[in-house]
Length: 227
Figure 1 (cartoon, one colour):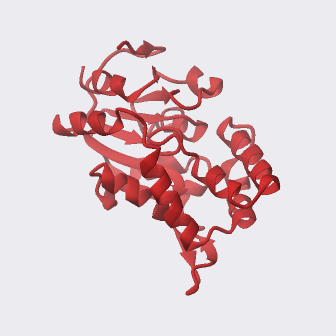
Figure 2: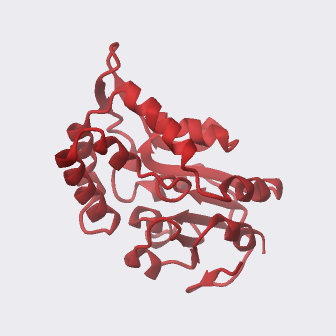
């Protein structure tokens, strides 16, 4: 299995920062939740998501709007958690196990919903403390009551801010499918030393153009990280 090199060369990375939606899992959580609210809500949420992922509009301009349209219940989030596990990408478990076994630090940084992602990251043996995502709040009846508006992950530039704050061992490889993942390399000072565009689910030209590597599947990950 070969890996497409775009701008950079091989190196040995000490830390890997991974996205979740359309990277670790083929599911786009917010779109999955929107589909449960009918065609019109699904259409409006999907359009906003694609515009944000392509960098056409700022993430912070759509984050609250999408959740207000969906208003996910606690039950919805539990079901999404199971969906994430069922749609984990082929080879992801083995690849993460291989690089972890070589002493590489693995951190998950996502603009997705923490309570839905936790079951997936636990199944991949990633400690809760190494998952950084956006928390929701619910009423006693389990209805949607809002999200953590303080989280930097609800806006552009949030992922670099989070990763810088973690002081991870370097060099750092960031992996994801969207423009907010690419910001880990392009926002200066760079939070990551290299960026790999993951195209196994969605291939976005603006993301690929700024990448150092293109990964089509997780079988390629150990070669990039460990070589």
